Image (cartoon, helix red, strand yellow):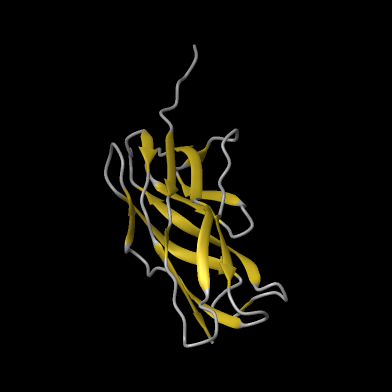
Length: 156
């Protein structure tokens, strides 16, 4: 007997924000890849997390589909050479992924670099990655889920 698992694929397309503090050149952020939690089976619920390095993990009764990978969101931050900047991530419970079943909330966002640790290179750019944790409901309906979130960067 072959058992078929209803799969959920979840990811977030990212909105981009730009901010500056009067420097010669504005600091800008451009999304190059969305945050993807990959495919999984919800079971009686739990969570799926993706780290800033792309390590995917699950808790509760969530079963990860091994052939599906999770990916952190990736951005290119550009601006003044060697300028330092801060990163503001979304707060908990503000980001929802919507699809064929109930909404799923994303929280525990992390970034690399984190907080006030951003520093542009001699060429005026840096790669920023963002991970997070997706809360999965009991019996979450299978299908594709998506949403958006905002990241803000500001010069120090």
